[in-house]
Length: 401
Ligand SMILES: [Zn+2]
Image (cartoon, rainbow, N blue to C red):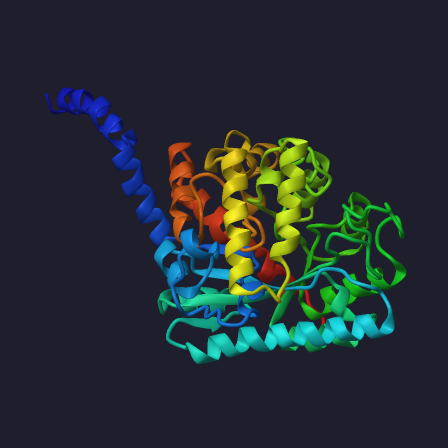
């Protein structure tokens, strides 16, 4: 009799678990417990602007900013890699030295913000730090560098940055540099992969215990890095070319090769890398993104730009990717390899945004979508932070200094 009752109750039970409310509830529990890490946050671009305070909650609808400590907490985002980003400029000794100076100023700003708010956040350089800060209810601020330009052709600078807390370098940005070819340089390849200096950079990063980030680099650079590295590497913010055919994304072969290396691809939420935009949309977004990256914008400029962005988003609304489209990229990597080689690097404050996710306080929707697709708590913990922390630990362990 008992058995029969149980059998009768089963369909009801499973139905209850798949109602929207039940999914939300289950996802909230998983989200709360998981260590959530995003590997590419461009919030330092805002922090370097006059008047932006990362400890104060901002409103995306008003100023378009997507990250600050209060909203990270609200969204259950435990840690992010704050990007020391410099767009590639002239490659002269003077310009390179200037890039180093600017990078050091960004490091200072990040350290200062954390020092001013020890009750909200702490600097993290190891998985241990991240798990400890999570327990303390504080945000973990990791530091990554987007573009190896500030390395300034001197390997000694890698140790300098490592000591300032740097744990990854994206070898190039949108243009070739003295380290490697980019995937998007309008002039095409220059080194056919890594330069001779770039090879030294990868070796030194391995030796120091700093992750090599292959987002933005050309396919040949990626394969050169894989041949050379002794430890797993990461793509801090890249998506899948099979789903969105742009050179900035990774091919299936690259993703499989990365998995064999033990590395991880962290899915990027920039609309143009999630879903291929129409040519017109692409051009208008590119123009806005370039303007956004300027650091000398007045409040009026910022407001005007944000309005332009909103109008643009409205105009191309049907082209915009959704949270489901973004999660399709996560699922693609899992199907191609396993759940051990994918994570999240949304590129917030750098163009990352999909329908359903405006800012960092919205990230619970990713967990909900993963639960809806039947992923277990264990899988979701790996995607959200377990995988990237595994790679960081391996890189740390592989160091030989
Ligand atoms: Zn980027």
